[in-house]
Amino acid sequence: MVRGFTIALSFLVSTLAAGPVFGQAASESNVVTATVNIAPLAKLNLSALSLTFPDTNPDTTPQVAAASGPLTITARARATPASTVTLTIRALDDLRSGTDVIPASAVSWTASGNGFVDGTLSAAADRAVGSWPTSGLHSGQQIFLFQNSWSWATGNYTVTLVYTLTAP
Amino acid sequence: MNAPPSRLIGGGWRLALSGLAAWAALGGVATAQTRVTLRVNPTSITFPTADPDVAPVVTAPALDIRYQVRNNGGQGWRITVLASGDLNAGVSVIDIGNISWTATPTPPFQAGTLSKTLEQTVASGFGNVQQPQMGTLLLQLNNLWSYSIGVYTQNIVFTLSAP
Image 1: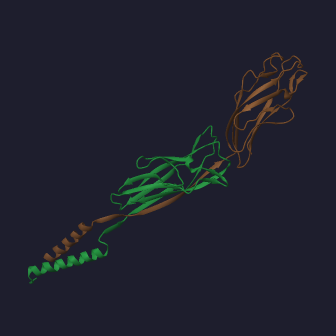
Image 2 (image 1 turned 90 degrees about the vertical axis):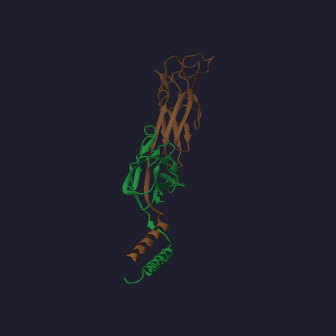
Image 3 (image 1 turned 30 degrees about the vertical axis):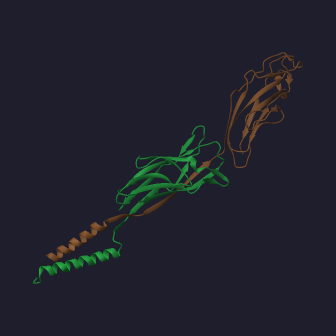
């Protein structure tokens, strides 16, 4: 009786003195693979879809600005690495009013905004509006100017302009 | 049975002392190995392709995180995540910091942003989690126009550690 009591007591004392110790560090890891597919994409936004040059005296206004003011262009593109995103403009024809013609080159523009360049319209070839070495959102403005001249026959001249944004 | 009571008591102390000696030899502690279990599913996720103007942030399929912590006493546990690098597609790179997450339930889970240099806490608590518990993570990618075309991948490592 007495011996059994003593052994039990000694075990209890030992346990209380040391105590159960938790916290041997444990860890487990899992790996997850994340994939992102970036596909080709290009979007072009123009602040206006028509331009009108007012009729003015060529002596007082040899260069006529478009009545609607600057044209704001926003070009968004995702391209392959190390490629160049380009924006071009092309007149589908010269300005025409019936049988009367004003060459497309009578219209030029000055540009502002990173990557945008000044230029002159052509009915024969694409003209650069802007270029960028990387994907991204590029915004700028064109101020169109019409070369006013006494030699133009009276009439209401029109031409269609095509902008092309290319992201290779 | 006929021995004097004093002698019986003395023998008992000898046993006790020998027990203590053995205890000390083992390090004097009763160690319970902490056990942790972590299961993250699925093990691969793909962010959807989307127009950045329409979806400036894209969300990957949900990650289910099951975890269990035992024999941890009252000590802390933590689930962390560390990216093995930025998202890579050949020479093209998307900074891994463009991926963040929201999580439920909160707590123990919390929102955060991936890092390739510092482990970020996904969930934390104290003590044991005797029964397996589950949380859900939604990883979100900032969908920017500046990304180059490509298929980007990277491993992200979830770790449950205790204490």
